Length: 343
Image 1 (tube, rainbow, N blue to C red):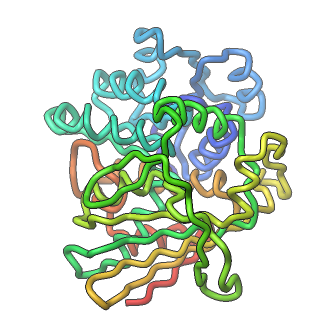
Image 2 (cartoon, one colour):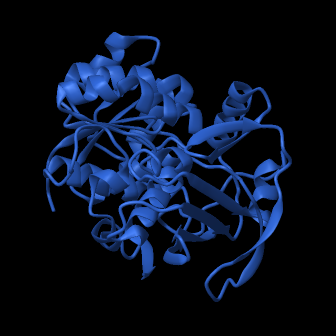
């Protein structure tokens, strides 16, 4: 559907940013290409003739204001988000437009909720952090699995990634997060984030077939521990990662993703298995798809479209599960994501 609305994409030339630009164009939006590197922006613009190029820096608020001028919303794809999120949110608030990002950094997302909730609500606009594979998808799946439950005792999110070739941005974000934690690990327990030095356990997780039972790293904590508890009263939220993918992520010589189709997707496949428990009762939601970076684009653009068409349920800082009808949102992502719900 042709919308004709302009959407500023900060970090447009990054790995995920390129997928977001392509998805916006596919959905009828007009991306405004922005980011810190003018040369990379011009190179990207050469493959998207007619798009506006607006270099901007988080150290220069006026340049961000120019980048967002006339836009209906901004999508921030530029990490590390510990550096970029706050300045771009400030610019979005000045412009009076919705802000969405694809941050996987736990502390950066927690900062967004802590520092901007009141101001965004007072401004009557939306700030949506972690509207991506990590954070957004897990939150939508947990919310869909909950169904008519208003609370649960536990939520478990297991990531069955066939592989994980991290981008440079992923490595940079991980380095920043590690520095912020002082080498500690983090988990969400007893209703709060807890930092610790415990070794992470290796467990067995029974994924749906055909993946089956696989070893996973327990408490491999991702942004879901911020998004899910932001609106669901679940005191224990745990995330798990397939051991093969965890090893590739941590190995310094693992190469970046390599495209295997015309859209730029890699061969990586994923299965996200979410189980929520209340007493002795379990409910489950499962998502399958290809390429965790590529699938972030339909996730964030679907959210954007629903916000701009008045389908969001709140204002202020909010995560995907709070804002949208989770099952309907996930089903709208076909064929990018397949959904199975067991209640």
